Length: 124
Image 1 (spheres, helix red, strand yellow):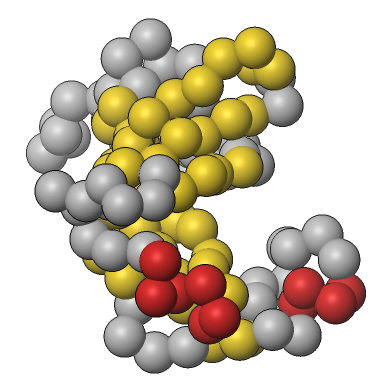
Image 2 (image 1 turned 180 degrees about the vertical axis):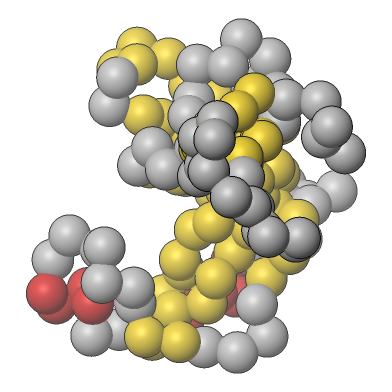
């Protein structure tokens, strides 16, 4: 039984395999509300606040936008993660920013790269 309602996103074990107590057998995600992690350059952090709205676009949906809200901002800077596309951007200090994005039609998928635009001057 799963503690949440959702869809199976990863199967780590198959029928007939031995499982030890506490081992993860399936990953379940609620795709109706996605948690988005963004990385904001230190120089731009003063323009981001908790509750602020943002607009998200994804390559598979070029004519569609999704809306979300910033839910938290990491207290410590870190170097840009390796999955950022350009070497120059990977050298910058960034802060992780989490947002929640309603996804009722489940168009967005976990791990899908997106672009986000923060709406200035609009926080909760």
